[in-house]
Length: 160
Image (cartoon, rainbow, N blue to C red; front, top):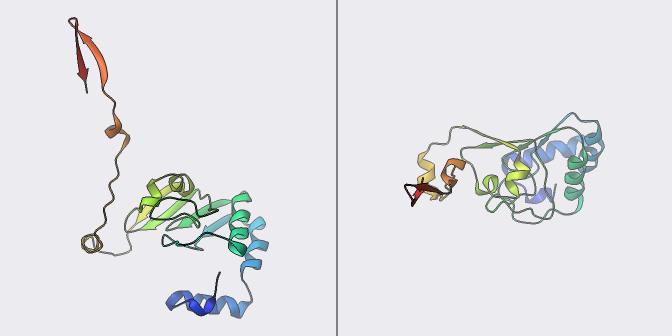
């Protein structure tokens, strides 16, 4: 979706194949009601604009469908850096991402749109994290403990 002249690499090759078959957003819209599985690979984590036009209509149809939705990298419409919905976003049952989690996977509302999150290895070395200087920390519910007040021998103590 978008201007095919701006595409490069694999995206340009895939767009040329779609043009050859005369598929496109209209064909996607027609297939969605018949689908049992939708793989959302429209956009990834590098989203830098709101979802509008034909793409918004496809996202709306995906969300209205009754089938399983698996997003690749980040559900379309979620800002990978903030978790923000960029006007409309796919609500996936599962998201498969690569190398590492992004902030948008962990921060709401992006986390709620991602569904179950799976991180898969695609061969990127861990040393790449040092080169891109990622600052993302994830805590588990155990780290969110709130101290409770306990009464012991008429003194009060905070118990962790």
